[in-house]
Length: 43
Image (cartoon, rainbow, N blue to C red; front, side, top):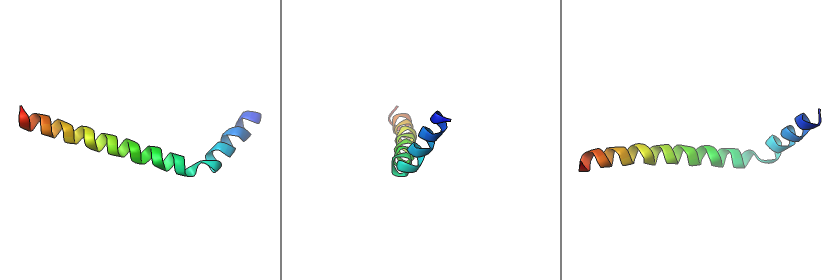
C-alpha cells in the first residue's frame, strides 16, 4: 500500500519530466537515424 501511494504521487508531481524524457528519446533516435544516413552517404 505504501509503495503504491509513493508511485502515485511521483507520477502526479512530475508530468513534465516524463514529457521531457520522451522528447529527449525521440531526438536521440532521430539523430541516430540521421547519423546512419550521413555515414552511408560518406562511405
